[in-house]
Length: 138
Image (cartoon, rainbow, N blue to C red; front, top):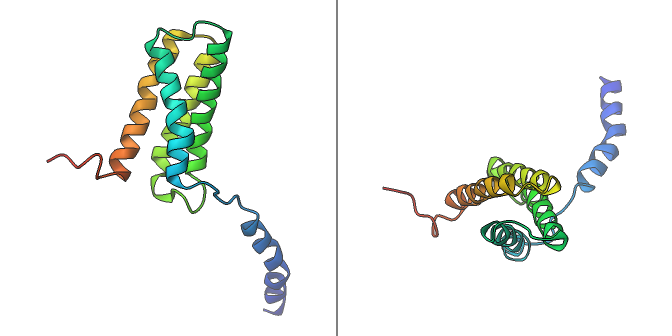
């Protein structure tokens, strides 16, 4: 029993260092949505609605927006931020990653198809998390 207690005592600094080194959120949920996610989502939607990126600059904008959406899902899953909606945030990450793949291939049709997934990921999360905006259906 003494050895077990000694082992726990010796490991406690290692365990506490691991938890204190965990990433900590800086932005609020509102800041993430308004300053990062919404502009990226709108940028991709606008490009798709205009028939897809028309030149290298537009493709670069699409690539940035897709990466922002993919990584934003990860930001939403950070500790102390969105534990209750991990599945919804993961959908955003997957849709953003698919958009990035379409952009890298310069595949306008695939990008248009994935824009529906991005919209669905956002809408699903908002229905779960913003009942004042998306009231439950009766």
